[in-house]
Length: 97
Image 1: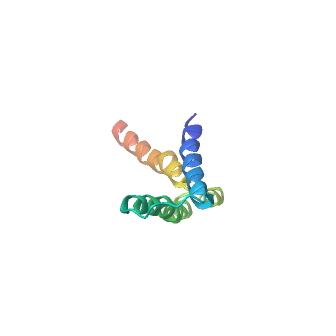
Image 2: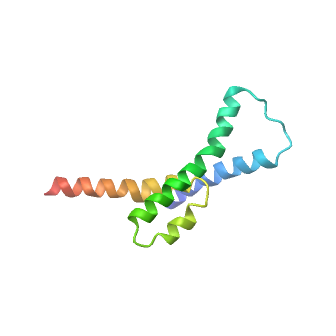
């Protein structure tokens, strides 16, 4: 169920980016619209580089995560499923000692 919940925002954001690129409707150049477009198209490459770094450094078999990083916004799912999960496990382990 968690994977489906992470797939929905990824599909929606990729659909929006696809719509912006393929539509012929001009987007008014207001600061809010330009900021929104900058975030939509600027965050995925930075997140992919971060995910590659984390996968190479911490995963035993990083190839699957390196390939998944090519999907825009997949780094959010990686963060909440793998990175944040590791920190929560470490905290719960410290509390039980």
